[in-house]
Image (cartoon, rainbow, N blue to C red):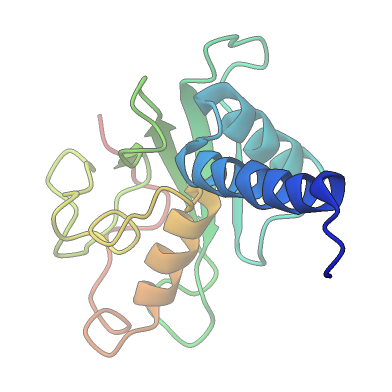
Length: 165
């Protein structure tokens, strides 16, 4: 006769059953907006963002974590070289399911930036290919990377220091 251990059998079945719901739940769990934005704020304050870009809250006590400032340092060997570009980013209640809105404060000549400095989300690197796991830092890195692209690197730029109204 084979010995049967119901306790062990049930334990094995229980483990298998208990792991499946956890795996399914993990796929559905989304990081709350404010947790993600607090992480981005912490990374920005610690200087953990990539070279050439910075991100931080526009108003240090903005409890809604909606309004942000960004900076892009122009890459060497381009018409953006030795220039500092100031931007405003806004994260609405749907962030990070939808990307932030992006507006340049410093005038820039790029095909996806309108006459008021607003980035067209359907054409702007980092916005057009936005993923929920992306960050504002990633958006600015992709725009900065585009500064060096063959189509952008030699574009004539507005006078240094000029800003949008």
